[in-house]
Length: 53
Image (cartoon, helix red, strand yellow):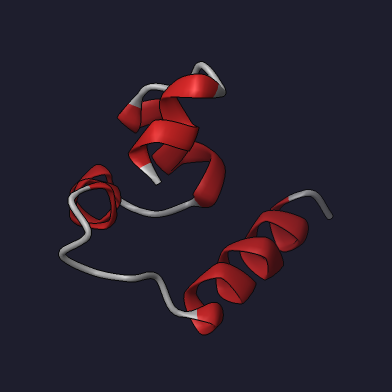
């Protein structure tokens, strides 16, 4: 994931803000210590949409 994040021009902080997760969790995902679940990604999308209401 880190390769794609860097190619997209995001820092760990900006990517974490976009996904609404902590930088620490994103770091674990970058290092492949943790694979994000579909539930995590769905929750991030829902929370982002709820914040726009």
